[in-house]
Amino acid sequence: MQNWITLLAEFKQKQIPVALVTVTKCLGSTPCTVGSRLIMTSDKKTYGTIGGGKLEFLAIEEAIVALNENRIIESTYTLGPEFEQCCGGKVEFIIEPMNQSPELFLFGAGHIGVEIAKLLVDTPFQVNLLDSRDSWLSSLDLDKTIKTHQTSETDFKTFKDVVKWGNNCYVLVLTHNHAIDFDIIAMALQNETKFLGLIGSKTKKVRFNNMLINDLNIEEGMSNVVCPIGLDIGGNTPKEIAISVVAQLIQVHYYTKNE
Image 1 (cartoon, rainbow, N blue to C red):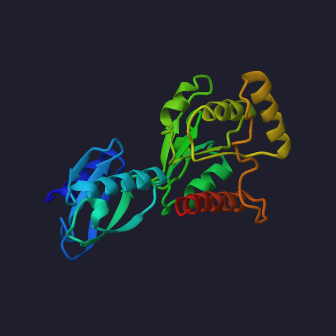
Image 2: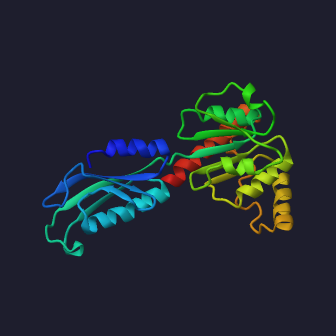
Image 3: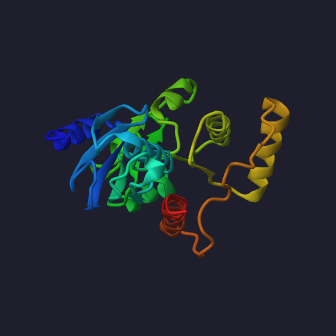
């Protein structure tokens, strides 16, 4: 596959998740050579080849796992009778998922929200900072990598349409209004997220839990919501709280990725 760099660049520009399979070692007689590559999208469309046959079939199956779990996989196969081949060679390859960086949608550009956004610069997280207050975001001094979104307090469709739901989606709710917090939590619980966190006390969590169950018939209530947010490392200034929250997000990202 001579144009694999161009293809990867195109997928990256469009933010299409792909898995890159690269043959790293060949011993004996094999249907491929070192450096053979295959690119696979999440719908199993492939570009290139690592030799076809059962070897490629198994590589594609492992590539699906790599994409779903967003982790690198290294594999070794000996091409014996179980492959319906008699060449007896050995092939090693690595599968790298790409374009699946964690993306944070942070509702509420208050003191803590802004500190969280700033601390996440130069980490794997793409940060989206959302706020419903007029002209609020334009007054902030933020790194150019932080995306900002003006939303509406009354039209929650503006919230839902901004978020890229899925297993790379992290949502933090820290708005200036408890009613807005509740509506965002209720909305997020009906979509897929990797992490859903709410700033607040245990009392707030109990109150929201009862409202979700009794008013909206969401049976799980707050069981899938992290509240309070942040690791218990002490400190109560906006920056200290932000550090504890960022540490928690990074822990979730790397721990679950490498499980």
